Length: 439
Ligand SMILES: Cc1ncc(COP(=O)(O)O)c(C=O)c1O
Image 1 (tube, rainbow, N blue to C red):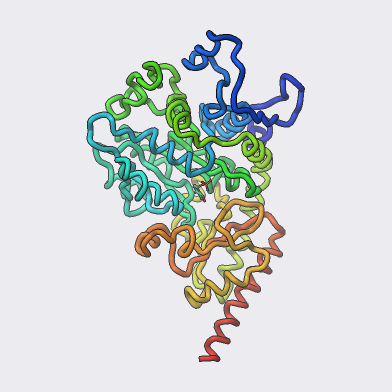
Image 2: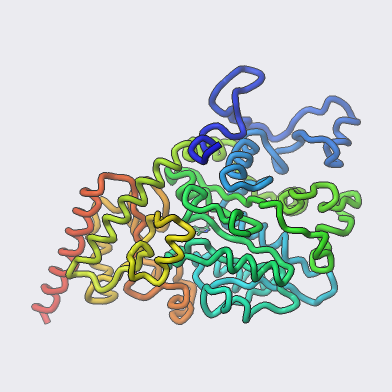
């Protein structure tokens, strides 16, 4: 099936009990056992089924199957948020118990601010270090890999930088060093890019964004591509190839084969730390995903028009948008996105930080908030919000300058979006003139 069809049908036909066509919201904490033996088989992971919603839930399972199919993966684990999914992905791969004395993840510098904080400041406290490359090329990442590296990580399209990573080259590099490539595909969505087809091993999403699309439910997911051979790298990844004492001596790579990564993330990390997606949120996200292909097409079209408008505006200093032929990411956007550039763009208002703030305050239709991928157009000032914890030098490496405004272009009529941006630019300029006259 094609993505448009998968997004509507995958994982659910109709409810066997009631013939309901909408996915039922199984709002239950637990599930009855037929017998003690049935319970034992479920607990031992010998039989498929449900036992407790901190481990799995039928509504959430439909979402997991649907996103796994959209990405072309073999299994998925949905989580309470995108950050939870990233944390589970990193913690699952970077195990420090093999006596090596440490584990690290090599990442590109252009990351969503909180993902950067997780890697740079939070995970190191439990022994997993991050090594940030100087740029997003495979060569820059290669320079950071050492014997303790357990994964490479990048955003397929960076938030907010809008950089497009060379997934194929980075996946080859990861595999040459015997480690998987984990990617965050939140901004591109599987409608524009399916990273597993280019060699990525684990795909993570914040479903809060374009996938859900309505900005009313938080959620995350990690999808297992099923192609990484944990047995072949047993020395680096004992957590998948050695008996797990916390689970009756189970060996994940043996019992779950290609789905070992998600099975362990579920049975070890989610079971013991519990960042689960609620069935209600899974239902809301499924409603959104049904229309993701239509929405993304409109997002892309509107963003192209807004980028063109900004480029010709005399009030705008610069515009970063990979759809421009002179963008350094244009060739990669052609290769990986078929020229369909996601609706995330950044620009600088002429007049620097203060003019940027005046522009931001003058917006009427476009919402001032810290989210992306909503049906509504959204604007954010990363330097004072999403990336504020980073020193300015690190912000610049992440593609954030003090005056930069990030726009997530929605699916309203494009004339209304452009009219709002035009009036806010004019207000920013007029405000500056009033200030200068008063000096
Ligand atoms: C690229 C990217 N990854 C992950 C996240 C985190 O997702 P969530 O807010 O659902 O935890 C975000 C949030 O903005 C994001 O933009």
